[in-house]
Image 1 (cartoon, rainbow, N blue to C red):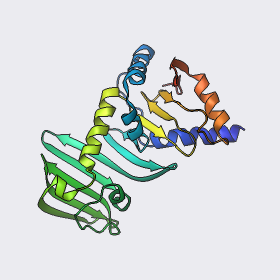
Image 2: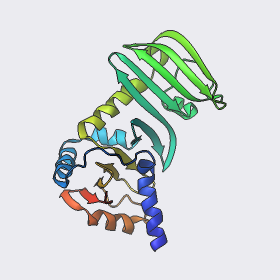
Image 3: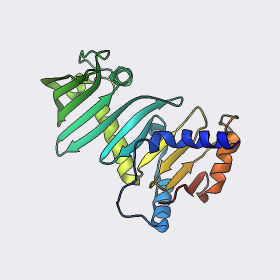
Length: 232
């Protein structure tokens, strides 16, 4: 049982804790954390929840990025940076990425493991690709965003995700649909807020553990539990 507990704790935190580290930033008080938790629980909408079930957020130092998750697996990750009118998207594992965001640009997804698209307003002006041997290929271009991504725009998706993250100030999220239909929001390296709307749609193998874990937190609202997991 203890081994199972350790395994499940690893599962719920892996996607987040592997991507952010503790830092020397000011330590938020428990009161401020609870206010942030209530703000999130009271205001986040269903469309944001739906999007966060597909993309989990993490950070390590100044690096922030999103992971596309499905059935407990990470398909690809990408990061978003915006300075003024210029935006950069960096994609890791583009083969999986182009399944969600088909592109008219004919780069070889079997050859390049990392691709960066740079955009000024609505025009992509540079595409940088890196091979498995760390060789970089840079191509300057002038392609309208809608020309490059005619069906689903990753710049738009990442902009929406970033706005959600900035609005609610979480530093990581985790979703494992193969275990249960719940989301964990890390509000600091110590506190997580769990949204558990449906206890029926849970993997029976892990159900008792997660219900016990949920009950340990403070019920700030129906279906929402705030828990201090670690001590700084």
